[in-house]
Image (cartoon, rainbow, N blue to C red; front, side):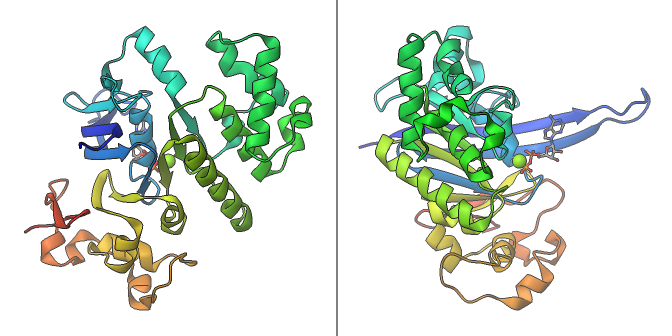
Length: 318
Ligand code: ADP
Ligand code: MG
């Protein structure tokens, strides 16, 4: 049987053209994403990991239809295993409205989904109001139920976001994202602003909810130790390109690409047991010129992503 893919990104690139203030100055081209081919299986977590500026948020925004890929790129979303795929890169209004119920985002900064001037209750019921679902009392009941689901108390509905700790606020934004009963959640650095001990709790919560509600996550982080914890598959991005992709165990035990090796070596608190290569930590990934020939890039022309073993892809010459 074919795999049940909830989300597919096919040949997705994103080029930004930055025009300098002066009319005669040459515009700067930013290749935020280049040739992304990613698939997320229903009920699973696909992580994108990479340093700041590698194109993770751009990929997330394209996955959610908040940004269009360059022409030729496709994003396909299947609400159910048997449904016709929705072309996220080409949605009309009605399709977009339906898609916005199915796909939600959780951000690094909970304040971006929780206005400091809104009581928790008002923020929570807002998505139901926007989509015209239910009445006042059923909306409030749903909000209380979602608060319980994320480990908070329904009494908290009457408070304002500032009365909560960072971890509680992230629970609130997860609860809000669940109000419309989505099937896909894109998490963009959801634990990056939290203390390590709280990070762990939020990851645990996200995992529990995923498994209980059969959610699928596109999970973005700059921290490989975090994604190792929650992901079924990890795509390592560097400067807009995936350089290596595999399940987390494979990446930790058998990293191939110099960039992945450096990322792994740089994790101060690896969640999986492994020896730390201090030499690599010291030198980092270095520039592509210093990489072994088979990984060398020239400009943005890179070797292809090739399968080196089942489920393990590396960008290298063969
Ligand atoms: P990440 O989330 O991995 O930090 P981003 O996707 O935010 O990376 O950014 C990737 C690259 O694209 C960066 O160089 C960034 O400056 C650029 N970029 C992102 N969004 C825009 C935009 N709206 N306009 C111009 N450049 C952008
Ligand atoms: Mg980002």
